[in-house]
Image (cartoon, rainbow, N blue to C red):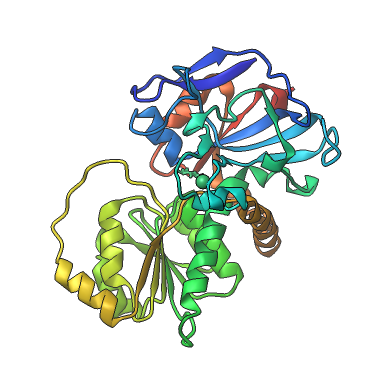
Length: 358
Ligand code: BGC
Ligand code: ZN
């Protein structure tokens, strides 16, 4: 079978490789992959800045956002033809991993398919245990490739809401920084729940990202002519900020913009070594005197994936067709390298696997 792979640590090494079709272990299902989404982490890996191959191998199959069809079930939980989303993390033996909270792994020996220590889903077939496959309703066939990024957002927003519940004042203004897939999904999640939501990116309001934000009733702000630390003066107390640019400078600016009793959720992974001069005293004092919470979130577990599917359904019902507009490019597997050099206004590229095209 064919797979899209890279050599971790090496820039621009993306290539199509030939691999044997995996043979399922007892209890495992054989999955025929249909679509695989490409995200910022894949770009970081292809730049050689992130990612590890499986032990003893020198290449890594990319892809951690996928949907597939069950070809051979191998268990009673699934039947041939079921639509499934494979989960990303594989637990180690720490207390959190053992209780299904592998997104909160404390020992760090987890693996992540397509990212760290395990091959990903950008290949024709996958053999996997049912614990790491989520069955998805067939009517979400067109949207389910967004389940993985939605699961990241679900976890982040859920935890932010939990922190926010400490104080009685309601969320009057939420701000999403970045209008890539995570930012758009976060804004849609907040809007579907009726929150007054602002979204900022460094593109004009007339760009696709700006229009998509406005289409769900978020107020879009072009960040190229507005400073983040000036936003509170214009928008009032920012109770919740979801940082989805993955830019560490923006993350620190967001700390200064965060309102009293506010919660700032950082979702982006910065892989560089950028240095900043900041007023550490000012930020520290504002966080303490304002009861503010700044927290990071990574990955997701089965529960987040389950709720992600539910949230995708709700968003689709509220704004039919909006989610599919996030998929701005579809490429065959043979051209997956092109997905690793996206245009500025591209949002989500989906690789169509050979089996989806017959
Ligand atoms: C994935 C997460 C993963 C993170 C860090 C993200 O792109 O969605 O599942 O934990 O990268 O490796
Ligand atoms: Zn663990």
